[in-house]
Image (cartoon, rainbow over all chains, first blue to last red):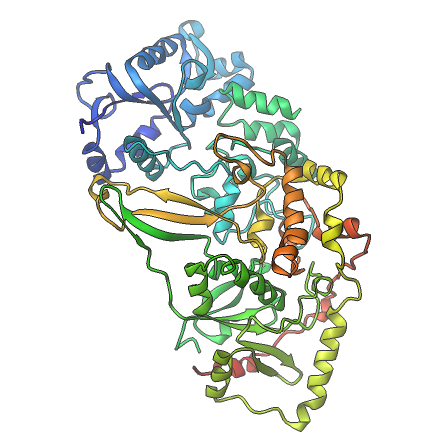
Length: 262
Length: 355
């Protein structure tokens, strides 16, 4: 079996997902037995060859014209395009500027605006066809390895297709959204678990934090029900939607789901 | 007892109680309302490996089943009633070796409820006095004593081996009779769910639609339910290249799932049988009150009320049953004084039991 040629690309983002791959340490070596990394700017001294790739992994969101051009080139050069992390998948946290006043955001970040050439934040699939998305902010490294191994071996990776609550309730976690005995006191007014795709092992709720929604919407999110319930608990619709869109404001599909809800 | 086999018993956890392994009887919460989750997690594990194989060479083999003997103390009558259903489900068409092994290797020590618990309605589902399914049933008597009754040969042997157990004496007559009379008065209910499976065959679309508007499809109700057994099976490939040929590293495993998920109703080709939450809730209720009684001869609900406590949006199965049957279900409000705290001496009976 010839090893598939792989490229790992970084657009706008914190590079934390690429770092997660590097953090695999000895497992990286195992992975290298299966793949031939021909392009990975973050880990190579001299970037080699970004062409004729079998798989291109893209991290980061599209935030300017150059990146639009870059992803189109990557698509032409790769058989499979896989996004890693919520930036590439749905815009990531920087996507929040799409739902804020863009001029104010720019003015807060830069003194001199003359060199700023940003476009609204986009997930990679807004511009090119994406074959698979590895979710999370950052990605879970074990999830990454198991998905990549599955794909390399020609198997369908395990897709949960169900909310974080599925994994959360399999552990002995106290539900953040549950009504406590002393109603109407809640442990939390909002937890995004019910609308977020599982696969993280319910990491945040297991460590005492409500779900943040970093893995993006599950295939069947009940957004209006979640908003209704959180509103009953005293939250404003704006706040709930802002929270729910925190990682995915760069995705038109997510935007559409929220519009359908209204 | 814990010196012979691991002992699992209810322990306090915040406002609730959970089953956990205990080392001494002092850790056990004897006066617990009910555990937040049912005992099913010890018999149908949230996740369990079924078989392993080598990815490159095949050679599939069954995964070793955890068959350590355990003692589970504090099973409530509703949970024990639910086991009657589970025992059928996991052996009716073919034997499920995983469930059956855990069941065989778990000694169930029940603890009778003397009062109705929060959100419970076991009188209506007639599940407060199971006649089988347990090895020993404990009933608290006045005067820091427990009545122990065996429900199996294992339980019988266990009682005979115990040091601190005495035969019932004449002086126990009145306390025993009074305890069971009061238990019966507190728990039984003249209302019943007679005819429920026919009622479920009728159209109740308005009710399902109403619940569908509220339900988050989060599966908390199904995960705490003692009668929900649905699971899904997946494969996990060895994550490193070195392990691909290892026959223990590539696994087929199952984990809990829920009929409230879209994934549950999705078949090959992408068709979804129950696309809306309303239709999934209809499926859920119809299974519990029509499908299960018709196939297994028992109700698919044991009235524990855990789903009522768990639901984040306040869907109440008692309210649904009232609306379906037009039979009003009393809601029990526990008063402050009704909870009597146990003294530590009462646990001596338990600690002296020997296997």
